[in-house]
Amino acid sequence: MAEVSGETTYVPHHKKKIAFILSAMRHFARELKSDGWQVEYVQLDDTENTGSLSGEIERAAKRHSLKSVIVTEPGEWRVLNSLTSISSRGGLSVKILGDDRFICSRNTFSSWANGRKQMRMEHFYRAMRRKTGLLMDGEKPVGGKWNFDAENRKPAKTDMSFPTPLYSDVDGITREVLGLVGERFADHFGTLSPFWFAVTRDDAEAAFDRFVEVALPSFGDYQDAMLINQKYLFHAVISLYLNIGLLDPIELCQRVERAYFDGHAPLNAAEGFIRQIIGWREYVRGLYWFRGPKYVDQNVFRHTRPLPDFFWTGNTEMACVRACVEQTREEAYAHHIQRLMVTGNFAMLAGVDPRKVHEWYLAVYADAFEWVEMPNTLGMSQFADGGLLASKPYASSGNYINRMSDYCTKCTYKVRDKSGPNACPFNYLYWDFLTRNRHVLHKNVRLAQAYRTWDRLDDERQRSTLKDAQHFLDELDKSAKGSTE
Ligand code: FAD
Ligand code: SF4
Figure 1 (cartoon, rainbow, N blue to C red):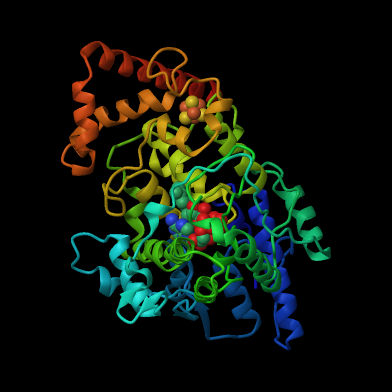
Figure 2 (figure 1 turned 180 degrees about the horizontal axis):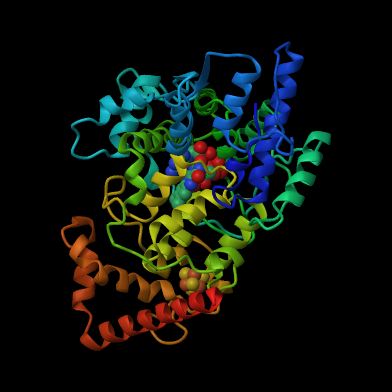
């Protein structure tokens, strides 16, 4: 096992993310050794460390006079290419095995996707329900419906009581890693403490147990809600554990299915959770590999604006964006709707280069690995692939954010103002985005109503809306220029 600097810096990962992964690796190595395995472990600050995975494999092969190595397929094209480059340099053969921590293999996904005009998640999800038998009553879905998403959009109230995720203790290994990360990655984004992530399988399982016990029953109802002082609401906060293999996806789903059959959780919660895991999670991974390494170049709207500085500093008057960035800086976590409908929505409306948006998401979240982050960012949140993943852009005015959160009550801008100096920027940027990209989106039936509404506005209203948007974007560009000068 090797900790290599190349993996810690190819984007400026959040400090907590680096500490989480290194500590989990060190704990796993210790566990393997105590089970009797022989483990060679190269630490980040070992003097001989080459700084790259391929370099460490080649060094280990030399030490032990190996002719071949066996590895599990990695989670990024970048790493896959570096592994295959070892074989092509000759001398050492690298055998890559499938990753059995996923339910749908890359080949199975390709067979499903090949020849399809549309690759909608819902169709894939139904196939996964049939394959796993989860929440199935013979050939039919339990409850008579495949998807209960329409019931999962309730706003939350500040006076409700919310559970917190299970906070794990920091032991000696983690303390040492925190010291290393604090020193070596001081200039990376994010705060390091408090650090409470689980770094062993046992602790990750305990965290999931707690989710099932206290949060799952309300998970469905409030899945899309956001509150300024509640970072987690009823979310599971387990993606980071799943993505590094501390938790097994199918075991989690079976556990949640049991909670439904035992009467502990309602169907909309159990189905919603299972859909995220065997549906969205498997689907985006399949798509990532199926679309190939050029997926990252997609940019259907030809957006080129640099990422605003406030994505790193949180220094903006927009209370919603500020809250999401500040929470991300503190916890390396934001839930799906914060990522999709606040930061993602803003970046798309403002015309930010999708590759820059992708690099930001890849850096700032503890659960971010390219196979899952990239399709979510480029496809779902930026619509950069022109609609391969989403049937319409997830674009919204301030109205949606106001309905689903309490951010607007703490904002300098007025969500009800459509134009003028106090108007919510999401309101005019929404129309600016739609009009600017009409040539791309005009045939999208799901946007027909929005374009009809715009066309009915009088000339003066249209003009003032676009003028406000232009002014806002000019100011954004000015501050970007100022920060690079
Ligand atoms: P919950 O809301 O409790 O959901 C349970 C689990 O379902 C999650 O842990 C996750 O494993 C899975 N899940 C839910 N939605 C998705 C989804 N759209 N794609 C894949 N799995 C899903 N998820 C990542 O794991 N890594 C990422 O780098 C990542 N980047 C994202 C970037 C953007 C722009 C967007 C819009 C979403 C991204 N997601 C990513 C998906 C989702 O936001 C996170 O999985 C979720 O917020 C994790 O928090 P949770 O464990 O509390 O999830
Ligand atoms: Fe965000 Fe607009 Fe609401 Fe302010 S008014 S919090 S910018 S949606």
